[in-house]
Length: 284
Ligand code: PAF
Image (cartoon, rainbow, N blue to C red; front, top):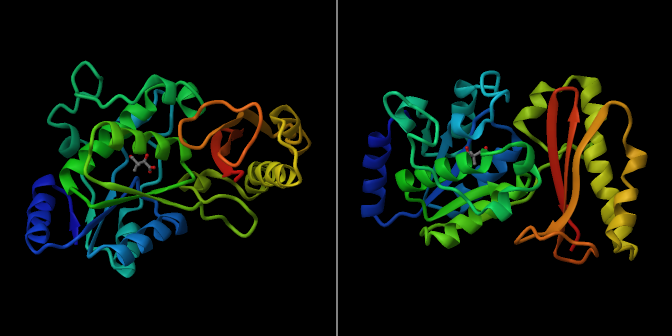
């Protein structure tokens, strides 16, 4: 069932809650791919009812980012969701989510602001305000859908860590279920933004997973010095890549690591042309 309004969703949720059914939420921005489908599958298996939200959230895009050209494929998304056993696809408009004038500056909207320690690094460094927009919309979706479980991909690892922190700090009654990264056979992590890549860009994009897999192999052989592990990356980079960051941080609280251990997550962001791609790997 495709629903566009908050009141329609609320009405249906009320009925399910009355029947004692468990509800899973998979928040997405649409352009669904096999990565999203793996989250949806998990929800359908675990919960009595599954809601997938499809909303390109304007407040998590920074000025100059790809808000206008972000792929919007609602018809195809709805079809995939129906085939996967989703009960509600919730696809609101920005006006439905943010009100009449939908004035999106934080002078006019109540925002959920995650702690600066979690947002001043990695993607948050270049995408200032991005995680405020993510936490605000996810919080709104939690309030609208009131899910028992919410499913998030580990590909957006910083987002996942920040959402877990928000849920804990604000006592939100939802269990966050992290889901593993889905990769193409080549190693490339699936992302809706892969749609922007040409065939040759896609080859260049393999640098991300190659760097991460190589670091993991070195760590498994016993190299734990982060400087030494970082240096292994450079042989995979060429003039087509611009490395935004390659960082070793704690998988739960994002503290920086100088010596890698089993709680170390390696985060990478790379630009190929105008396309910014991210990936990560847990060493433990
Ligand atoms: O990961 C995403 O697609 C988005 O950041 C999310 C969680 C759906 C919020 O808009």
